[in-house]
Image (tube, rainbow, N blue to C red; front, side, top):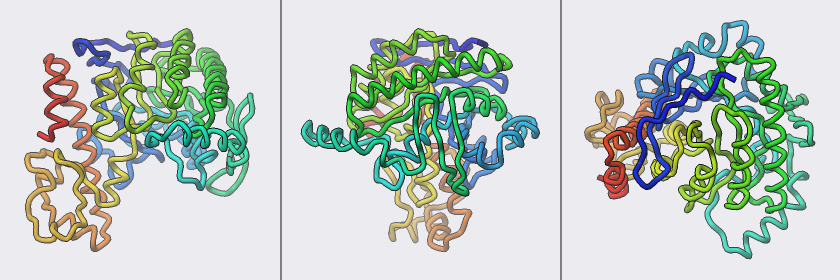
Length: 402
């Protein structure tokens, strides 16, 4: 193994949060850091140069989707994902494990990773129902102990992912940080299913490690995955067992209660080794990021900033701005006063609103640049606050909307 190559610079007094540096072959990741999602080796509506201009230093792509299109062998022939997409900074690839959920229990159902807290009785009913239908509802997925059969979202053909196959594909794609193959169960799954699932993920993680050690170049860092859903006991169990394996770092996956993300990641990070980096998978709302940073997470990826942007929703210190509101038709101020992003320095709310109403593609570009800049700047400001020993003041100011 290449080792995590992670150095802690400073810590938040009385908390698990810290600032640090992750060394990769394509540059340093100064943590905490936000990771932009480029599922198909592109951040939607943006060029790599525009992503970099938004002060984003890391991009994450999706192993399952790149395997289907254009194919990992083509990316390998191109010289790896960095050359293929003209991105000269650090990259990550997930393993395809999230598609076990998104194409399985969540397929054609209104189920996400983050759910609002429900009563104990309601939760029990959901779990009981899920226990019966968990496998039956998996429209495009079939899970067994050895791996997963996927039905392609492109043409309906069948494909087999095992831990070894997933890592083989990630090796070919060539990202700096790769994730072990896991099962991401539904948030409505029973405690019994969550427990058996996290143990399967652990066994798969060990197989990923063995394959990676035998076949990897030594340059890519492999992160294990923590599961356990919304249950503290299972979260801690997953972390305790995973820390015994020789991963370079850890990805915190699975589902969360919207009201309790901070505590959920604290449960995990209290158990994980301090000297290795921790990545929070699929979480990117501003308030959630602040709480996750405070509780020991180092990097984060999420589609929310760019997905929201494409729908005309833009971040600001005082909350989201729906640029399609009628009041912005004649508003010639920037989306966010004082924002240093390309969009705010050059265009007005009225212009961006006009682009959306006219269904111009440039609308998504300008909104995405702003949202990525806002999130990356927020996380970078949190890092500076940790280095300057004033994170508590920074957090207070953020939640006050200042």
